[in-house]
Structures are given as C-alpha cells and as structure tokens.
Length: 151
Image (tube, rainbow, N blue to C red; front, side, top):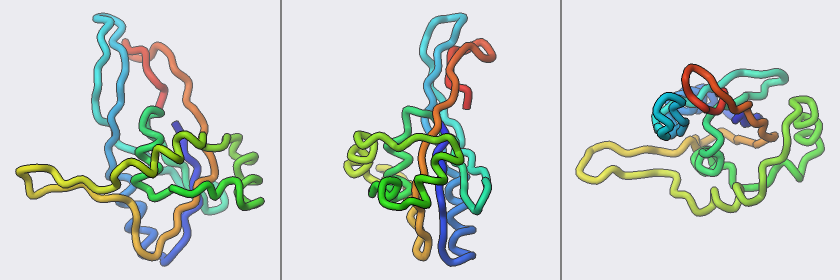
C-alpha cells in the first residue's frame, strides 16, 4: 500500500523524521505457492520523495491502521483542506477509510519490550507536522513463488 503524505516543519527535525520512517519494519503475510502455507516476515517501510514536497510511504496493506497510529495521523485532514483534495486527485489516491482512522486511535504508538532494554517509539517528532493526502493499493498476485501484495 502507498500512503501519500505532506510533511512540514523544522528542516533538521524533518530529516530526523525521514530517518525514523525508513527504519520502521512491518509484518507482511503472504502465501507460499509451493506449500500453500501462509508465511509472515518483516519488511522495511519505504519512504520516497515525491512531487511538490510530498512523500510516498510504502508498507503492507494490513498495517494501514498501525502506520497511521505510529505516524500520529489520527485526524481526517484529507476532508478539511482543498489543497489535500487536489493533491489526492493528482496522485490518483483515495481517502483513508474512516474505520482505519478510528482503529488508529486505539493502537499504542510506543511499545516497551518485557525483559529487554529495548522499545519501539512512534514517528511523532517535535516540530514536524504529518498530513495524510490519501492511499493507493498495490496489485496482488503470484510473484517469486508467492501469492502476495506487490509492494
């Protein structure tokens, strides 16, 4: 899935946000065509710079609500601003479903790992505003011996 974003803020803070966004891993489930079993692995979220200062973030479709929560996108900016509507048309993207926006409110953005000195933090960086433009689904099909999303 592709999430189109508009990010603005203090330059060096935006660069920190970019680095954090690229270091996130998401659970990806696909079906092995040889065995017929579902396999789960981790894939790194991909951040691409796009036109007009926007970004495109690529991740597994099942993770949409969690991506919204971790990025701090909990408001429906896409219906408020004409500029975002025009950008959504330009990217041929569609609105984020309201069920995913509501689900994002229930997902914890940080995680402490028991019996470990590690944890997972959110992508909410001081001085950075992240505004969702819209989403675009990837094709699904048979690739490299798997039935999977073509991320």
